[in-house]
Length: 219
Image 1 (cartoon, one colour):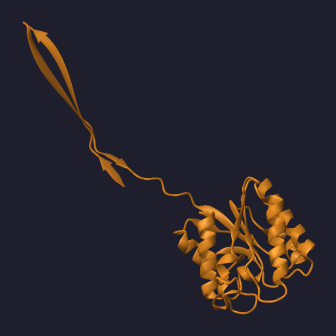
Image 2 (tube, one colour):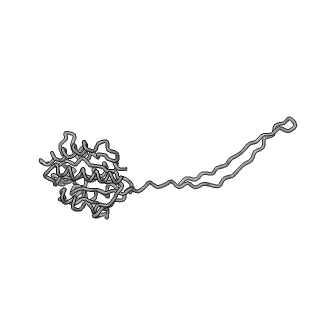
Image 3 (cartoon, one colour):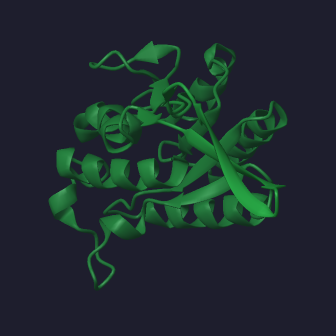
């Protein structure tokens, strides 16, 4: 809250009998109270699989909101342990996601990381591109996350999926990429296992790293 006291002094002049006289008039104004407009709270939907809800990521939305100073309201057809809405289901593949797609609520922002449970790369690409197209068409912003790495042969699909989605939507208004892969790697590009619960899922420290990058991107 800011307060200002305004005082205006008006000087006028006149000439009488060859002498210059200055007259002043003072106007007092009331104290003005200016209350800053609070930042707008936006709704956010996190769409994904276990990497957005299981193990360390059970606290992902809590950490995002903490980093963003509670600027977001998380919405979804499900709720996590902190009562934040979300649409991330462990073990979910494309068919599972499309079966519950109509339950995903309207949001200002969608954050998507999905596909690790699809054996077929093209199936996951088709599902993700459909969702991105639909959400952009409704006027929402979409942030697609370059997937966190996994410590097995499935990591190739993670890399390929991110490259394909990036090529399809890069430069599209309302679409942005959040790089969650790089922060989970060591300097030599090996996986930083200190951030992982197992070969696929991040731990609590990994969730904090992911949340920091997501919060910075969608703020």
